[in-house]
Amino acid sequence: MGWMSAVFVNKAIEAAGAEGSARRYLYDVAGVEPDAAPDPAQLIPDTAFFLLLETIAENIPDGAAVPVRIGAAMRCDDYGAFGLAFKSAPNLLGSYRRVERFGKVVTSIANFQVVPLDGSVLMQVIPGDTPRLGLTMTNEIALAAAVSISREVSHDAFAPRAVHFCHARPKATAEQDAHFRCPLLYGSTRDALVVLPADLDAPNRLGDAGISDFFDSHLDQALGQIKDPASLSRDVLDQIGGALSEGVPTLGYVAAQLGMSSRTLQRRLSEAGLAYQDLVTEARQNLGTQLLSRTDYALAEIAFLTGFSDQSTFTRAFKRWTGLTPASYRRTR
Image (cartoon, rainbow, N blue to C red):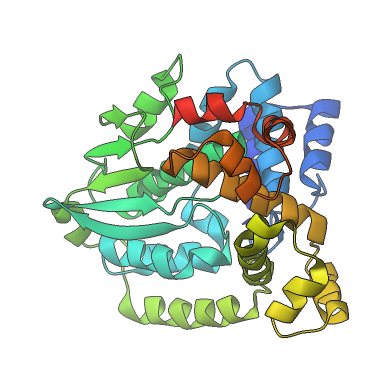
């Protein structure tokens, strides 16, 4: 389980154009008070944000354009201290390095890494493990927002050289074309901006080394104060995933592997808002999708390796998770 700043909830509901009871319903879906002042430090579970985006996509006729609208509406000040650190960095590369270093202050998903490639640089979204529409939409928000705040800090009119999207080309792309102002490459192997070195080296309009150092220090402290349920979740998921070929492991087995008692692990999961059975389901889903995508194993073998007693039970579970049968999912990879 990860987290997302509640600021993105406000932007998402504004982008959807929801009013009245529809607006309140969307806030309820996200678990955020509709009249609360925007607070970048308020974090919500990533699953709640995914569900919000998926609800919008299902109920808004032009829902495919909502992610780019959200990203286009983002400004440095919306991110609090993180945005100020981005703004005060000496150049755009310095801004991107701060995103790489401090992105988890506002979200544990759709974080970026800076990757040199063929005379240019990729501002690349780190792939997530959750094969669902909400994550795909969140990655597009991240790319659109990165362009918005890059334009805000740059002297010249900023545009990436190209943008890569893992998802397929939507039916209409007018809003994406207007925002990114560059070639858009759909069905790619990555979600990333391609940025030229000259743009990265150009000084930011408000770059100030002293102010930048101050916010770096502030953000270092903020990172240390974040209670990261994801680290415990990852540890438990790793143990479950490694044991599934022998059947679903008990909580007691996983606790022993992590060097703690069953009671301690149960308490820590409860404090982090995690349920052991949900983690079992997530581990099975993660392993199943990886095996379908990256191996030629027969479906019966994959069912066994993910802890199911037979292929039909695995097929029913996988369709419940993803909306696709395992065979259909494999054909899309």
